[in-house]
Length: 358
Image (cartoon, rainbow, N blue to C red; front, side, top):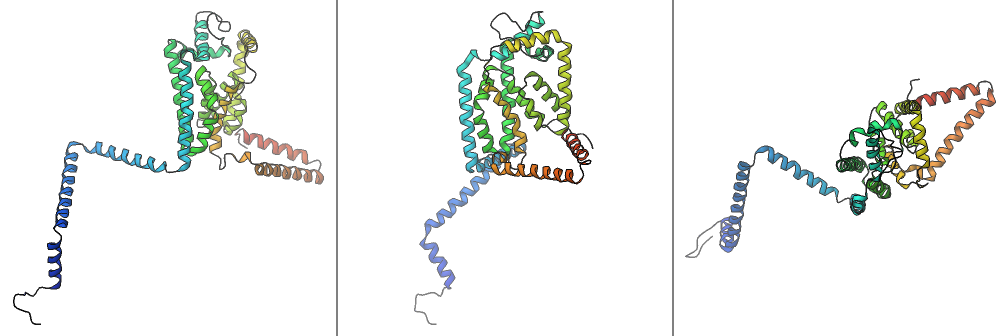
């Protein structure tokens, strides 16, 4: 290959690189800017590492990952609906509590005043002054005594504050397992919850106690059910959702409550007269808050609301029909043996229902 005078032989790659560098000086400046920015970030990170100790950086990382995880959860449409529904429900309940102001707490004041009147030698079932009568068993008065010794403003704050904290704990437990269903149930029970928080009635605390009883040992769970049932008969059907052994202990504690009421029979008669003579509405919507105690049992089922479907009713009816046909066939084959077999089966089922060993 011959070259004309004034030309120099250059390799193709070197020639292209030279042409690129000479043709784009802006690209070189951008590369330099990026390198400078990278060095500045490294320097800032090093300075931050010197100023902030390692445990603080570790906690910041934990918080950052937790916030990122919670933000990613909000992309779920069901969770978004649940958050909005819970926010509206809490807002309405809080607005009602604020609107009531100092007029709230009539039922809690009755417990507070009843204990103080009793300690002063008076009759808590016929109080004097702006107090509702105490209508529960006389032997339950000492249970309220540690709280009732506080000044009313402090006692009311502690009563309502503890109730709200326990309610939020139960809602958090249910929300972690079924967000949308929990929000719907809370919205449905918004009025009973708000009414109990407004008056300070013990029904909500009983519902929260029965909610927590399903996580406690059988003896304590039975005690909570027995106490709640003797205080207000409305929680009695919740005996069915307790664990088998807790059902047995519930009957034991209920029998102990009856015995204590018999020991204090004169005051028990006064209590019953006050209870049945007290003017209360026949339909107590605030008692619906006890349905909240059913949530742990429902949420542990594969399909919590399957019992609302007609197909579930048909399956249950089919099982009862099969058992009845089996008993009928046994009766036809051996009439003398059928009653014994049926009695044994019922006895075994009752023992299993109460958690007794076979």
